[in-house]
Amino acid sequence: MSDFFTQVYEVVRLIPRGRVTSYGAIANYLGTGGSARMVGWAMNASHTHPGFVPAHRVVNRNGLLSGKHHFDNPNAMQELLEAEGLIIEDDQILNFTERFWDPSKELTIG
Image 1 (cartoon, helix red, strand yellow):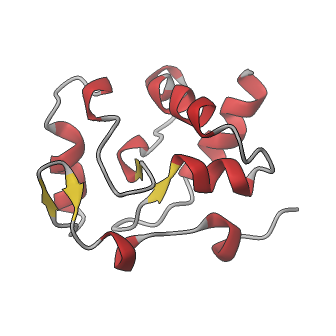
Image 2 (tube, rainbow, N blue to C red; image 1 turned 30 degrees about the horizontal axis):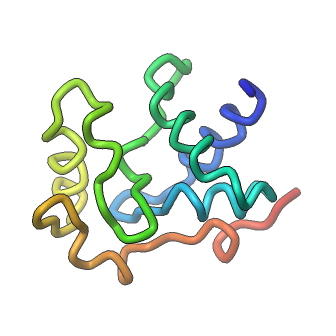
Image 3 (cartoon, rainbow, N blue to C red; image 1 turned 90 degrees about the horizontal axis):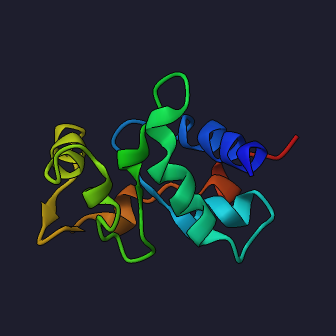
């Protein structure tokens, strides 16, 4: 599982500032389409991984800040995203479609 988590962190580190992706998009990119929940587990553990992992840039498929409770401060995820120019209301990214980054379209495997 730590190998999978490391792969997730490598993808998350490539998300550009001001953009977001979803747990499922990362899982699809890694060829494990049904493992969005495991991507979420990786994000929950990202603070234990050496180096910075911008976990705040990973949201659910609807643009909801579903992982916000896993930050030290439940407002931290929103604050970090707003500092990058995203607009958030009621824990949802309003400009989600414009800010969505799909690793399967943006990156090539290998």
